[in-house]
Amino acid sequence: MKVAVLGAGAIGAYVGAALHRAGADVHLIARGPHLAAMRRHGVQVVSPRGDFTAHPRATDDPAEVGPVDHVFLGLKATAYAACGPLIAPLLHERTTVVAAQNGIPWWYFHRHGGPHDGHRLESVDPGGAVSAVLAPERAVGCVVYAATELQAPGVVRHVEGTRFSLGEPDRSLSARCLELSAAMRAGGLKCPVEPDLRNDIWLKLLGNISFNPISALARATMGQMCRHGGTRRVIETMMRETLCVAEALGCEVGVSIERRLAGAERVGDHRTSTLQDLERGKPLELDVLLAAVVELAEITGVEVPTLRTVHAISDLLALRSAA
Image (cartoon, rainbow, N blue to C red; front, side, top):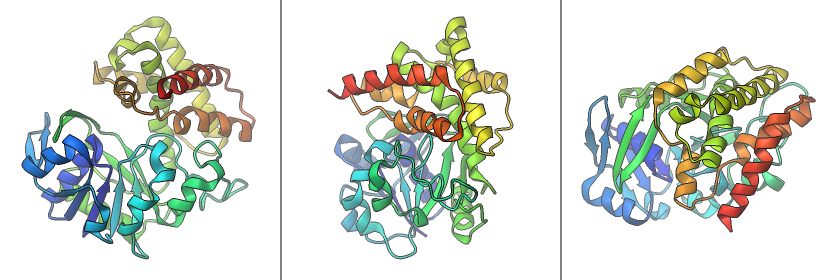
């Protein structure tokens, strides 16, 4: 199996190292000091499950890699529309694109069925710019439950979690999903193929939609947000509104808000990806988290006043941080 990791940051490099350890032909695509470190020393994973080092090929030029079986997309969703020149050399007619993104993906209503089948969400696919680059037919959904950080160039600190759930937009148990799942499990990851990944998308989103923007607004860690009474109540309200939108679309999360909060609190003083991006001056990936759910609320007629308020404030933060 030949796999390219386009955007081999903390999550991408971690997955690439695991797949390489399992024997896959892995190519990491990155840039800057991180790329230089991976070329010299490999990917060094520091983990409570045991440290290891893997030496997959690493480059900044996808043309050197050529067509692959699977592209694991580690880019932020904000970069999808502009990634055409990077991803084109990696594709043959059956290449799958596995997007490890938070939030609502651009393919959400592709082969969804029902009254919204084929609907395009403007907040995540403005003007169809993302679908033009990443054809929904290639998409395999991926919900990431692992927490990682770049401790230093080429060094990935694995905080907790090894689960990467996969699923087809049409809910089938496809050969391409099963093949990739087997390879990831051989590399030491949990990788179930879910019959309806949209339920997992909403489960993960339940935390991201609340913790990520508030962590950036308050400059707070997961543990700090959970321990602060007022903030915890705002997060609970955001979660309740999110569950109402999910239910209106026929999805069942299957986890209580209290259990979701308890799980977040156990993570401790971990900085969300949005807070890390803010601290590093990178674009904030909030459209797929908040704006998309507000748009879905409009489609389904669900009232989400707290989500709208937090979205308005965090959107201003994102605009100011990008200026």
